[in-house]
Image 1: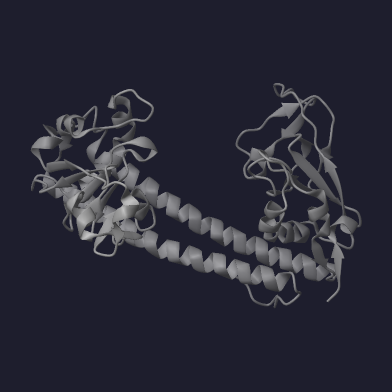
Image 2: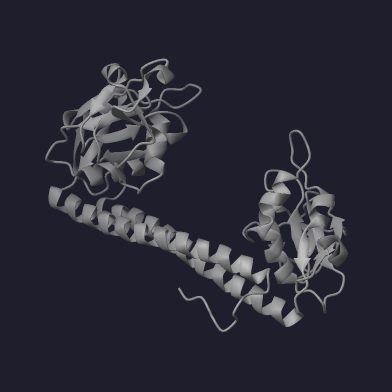
Length: 381
């Protein structure tokens, strides 16, 4: 297969800075900036002419953390952190095909950026990217396959987001706002409903890394499902465990400080927790643990507001023991917990499916840019 360098196919033109102005009927141009490459939720306008793009152009983020991001099908004037890629011979190269090829080269472009503090795309690196010389119809069909694949991936991501909304809306409908307690539920301080302990970290922690006892960190909860911690990346020695807080399976842990405040999980393992966790053990029969977990999640903003002032919000055991929580009938809590468990099981299926779809997309991309796609095959949700 023959290839041609991107610099021979497109003309690259940098954008310019514009002053946004209010929209006026028939007088404005859309002002396109980096955030607009991913969505159209925050439209801005300008009266100035500059580097104009149309639906047949590609846009690339030239500077900043998103350098290398590709945008399709925008019309307007682009900002100074963007550049326009305009195909010189539109009858020979399909815009979408070139755009998907460039998306596949994002890591390469990022590795070649210049600038000590703010990364900038290297024009030489961009122009050096090799583009397969496929017939135009083949490029067109390849771009359609990739577009359909992306749409299915986006649908799966939206399905996962909708499950989050389902859980939140179910909580609101069943229990109302837990701080305002519009439904008039009985309440009790959390300290009367469970044993609460602060975690502890043996220091220096590197002296106690071993293989005896799981060492439960915040990151261990972000890699699994939304309810449980089932494994840890690191363990500590028995000596380290003696200087920490050892919890049994079934304990609920709550991140009580920093950006993770409000994050909660139920342990499916026995292990030690560091001093960024609070543990809730021996939970009263008046409380379902999954309900309590989601109640804590739901109350995150309120908990941040009541945290003592400082460089980072920090909720100690004293504050959390006094935290007044609603106590709906246990049967209603259990019913809600079943909704959550079913939603989480479905989320796990969707997440596995998403990984498979993303892997498929990667495979299709490789074939598309080698001219190996079988166009009779299609992707289905």
